[in-house]
Length: 378
Image (cartoon, rainbow, N blue to C red; front, side):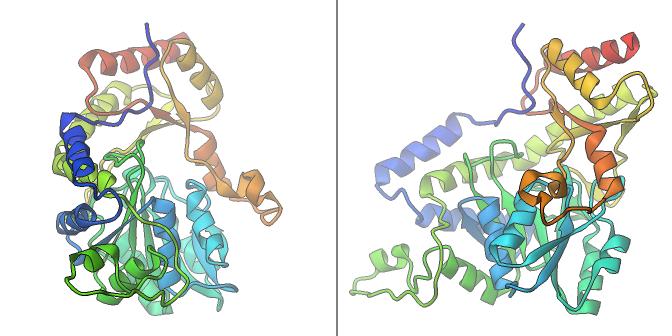
């Protein structure tokens, strides 16, 4: 029996046709399809503007710049997140200050409050594995402390908070379209914002600080000489990617609802296994289940690692819980002595199980029966 993967992108002939059509136009870099994708994504999440970029890490980097984050500043963020979260702070020359997380795997606001100093410029919250963080609470805190709120929504396309899609609540929200995410453009990212000045500068920065973009120059019947008004970056998305993204966006709500139904089956199947603790969805949230995570309570016969080894032996892929950046070699020196016991506890005892669309009934049952088999044998 073949190994069951942890995730698979859902790509069909629709996306292939979209990419094919763009290739035949000969406009394959950032152009009209990128603009169309931006407009449709903004409409979907409920923001005024959206800016497409090469990936979510570059989105976060540009968000830091337009937020005014610079050398000597501090940005509070979770350590329990993919390393790109903290790296984006470093790219801007600032220092990531790591806060603890709670049982929902999202950053703990009480610890955040205790970490604020005169050097704090921004708070970077993460909607971890698609679970919305408490945006309202952080918006209120940032207003009180005159800080900028940035949302790392890499995993959260299609998730909602208090009845509104993630991407509509604040002024810098960064998304990922990596193949592990709910929808994909191969790779790619998007920044949603309600501020016109942010949108304008983000578009400037993503294309070398160029005053007039290629689409405008080529559409003009007059000669236009562009200027490079500040040092920018090559963080563009291609029209090929955007064409794929437009087709993916049309299916996003359907994909999210299908993923939620799989998660419901898992929840029902695992709720009575004593050593497993499940995430309980907040009534204010509509989670996209970008990943399905179980927490294995320590002290039982199985550890997280022995469970993963047993699943692998049965041909079912798993992944460790969300990493902690402060324990990675790249951050060891500057974080020496830093202890984040809650983050380390949740990271070290949680496991990601396979969840993707479309997942057959046989594949779902294979995951369920394998998990039960391993815990029953322990």
